[in-house]
Length: 213
Image (cartoon, rainbow, N blue to C red; front, side, top):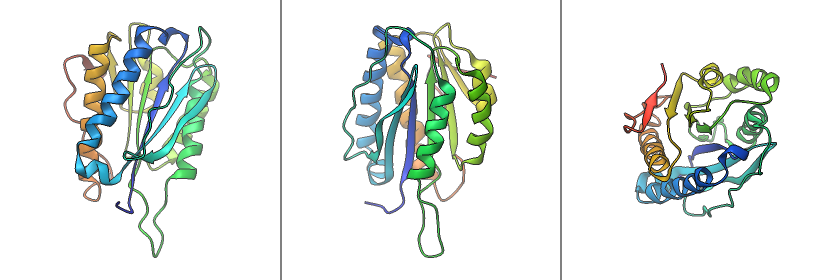
């Protein structure tokens, strides 16, 4: 196992509007992502995955762990309630500060983390969300990628967080499968480019995913 890890954080909306088919499709998408990455020997050596879900509150359902050790956690959400995206970003920053090993004089630290955030709405905790945007910018992320999924997803708050905003019009199994296959390609590309560049080049998205400009 390489001493230098590539931390990948999945920050996933599990609010009430995700219940039913969307959250089931989300689970299948995450499993597909892990399965695909495990087939990439470069990713298997260095990629580490963490999953943070958020609805009325944010929680770490999968602490940062290697692809080899990863076990699919239970992903579920409430019947209804707010979407606390600001709380999720706060939790993410706490995890990055705790998890990611920094380079020192005698030790090479981890690669810059990749964050993938998915939401089907907008932040309910708007003030907290606004406070967390500059905090996110202080962290050494290689890329923060945000996906607005479904017709009710709001892209404007995501555009304040990152220039890499994408839209997924439908939330069925086919669309989520395409989304997470694209995420796996992004992670694999980022894994191979680490050391050559401090950021990553995103591969072209599949037809189901539109770039928000």
